[in-house]
Length: 410
Image (cartoon, rainbow, N blue to C red; front, side, top):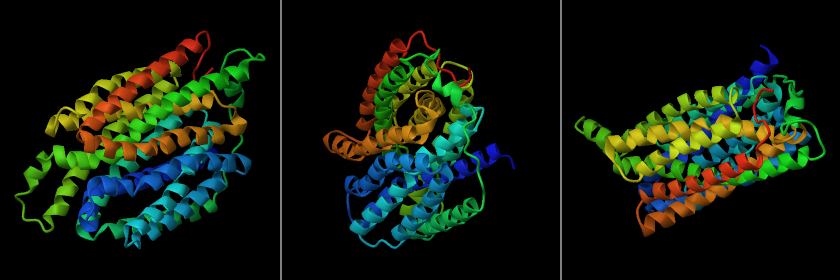
């Protein structure tokens, strides 16, 4: 197996795991609400530390990956998240669950700076590689809600965490036995992202990266808000699948209703696979800034529509929104690579994910406030407002960096 294929294989597996962990908990929100005798907002808040550390710890882990190597960081990722999953399976109280989820979040934060850093340094067709990697993460998003709902129905949520923890240990051992060359394959291209080399090149890249950080922070708030709300929102507002199957003589009908909602969530995230592939292809062919603006602009009307409709129309609107929302990720990750030097690439991704997932974790509380003040559907109207601000920041980036090129290839 070539070095590039090893990079893609192990980063894809790790990306799958990190998003699987991310989506298990929201999928179980309503069953946990019944089990713990807490309301939905309180249950969702148990995940705050997990999502906070998922973002905040990305920067120090990125620095560790740059100081040592990305492969070692990914081995720690597999070991640490598996340990956290097993602790979660043993949790019997809200406090112990909150703390064990925090362990998962702390170690899950390793993946994005280390994995994205490894891909951006070691693959030649970077946009397409990031697109393939995005598909793997999307498969984690897709399978987690349905797997969690199904296993909750059959044997309980504890088994879900035990299984994923055991699988993570196996992949960590395999990666420990494999060598990966992390020598940059196209560092010169990234060092000259602002055009011809001059004394202001580094300063310009920093300026562009800071503007990009504003856009990514807003995108992170929208992303986290949707990810924690969507399974429960579909269970409440898109019950048509449940209505179709409720006539079947099934045990644990409450659990079966959650399965129906999580299946719809998984179907919606399937659409994101197509978006990731398209985004990856376009990232290698067109100006990254304009593609980033286009994908976010096309997502805006559909996220607003999600707050206004129900049943089948809600699922259709959510699918189209997810197509563009996830499809922009290979483009966004390519922009980070273009505006950061190879010597601190993983640190650059750490900064991105401390903003996207760290600040984005505040959406857990924002969602609860919006739900109490208005309704769960109003979350998506607020998301539309945040995307509008995001579009303004991307337009500013395009204007400030006019006269420069921003492509994955020369």
